Image (cartoon, rainbow, N blue to C red; front, side):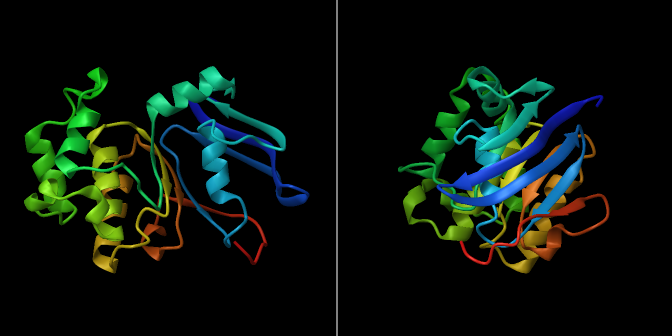
Length: 213
């Protein structure tokens, strides 16, 4: 497919002898927005980790930009794709130091401008004093918003978002969804149970039947 970004082909996931996903096929072209839903334990997060090269399929194939996944392609994925997980863990230390560490990488230096940081912090309802706080002392919702903030600052156009609004109130859930969905050229692969993501322009994919995590 033209401008294909991500493709899973007859993908299967097993944990030991237990098969939790089989024959999963999905193609995500550039600019497509996908919302993946399903009960806990059905392999949703694992599909993200496979694309990032952290786990492997038990069967089937996964492709990125038309190339079969291997260690080199997985490295390309990690350079080009913004991945934000439910439990954002950026390490220890003041938030401003963590942001500066991200900015220290050469490709990011021009992206994290003070003006842009201030605008996004306002939109995500983050107070300025949070920059002085130790990341480990933040609430779950604050940690999620810092992860989202960094993803937006890096200006990547492909996003893997795993339950990134789960700890936010309804108003913030909508604001975050709005931030990502307003860009027609962005490719989104979202895992969420939040209805704020369910709107025109996003395709819902439901997988699995598992009842346990």
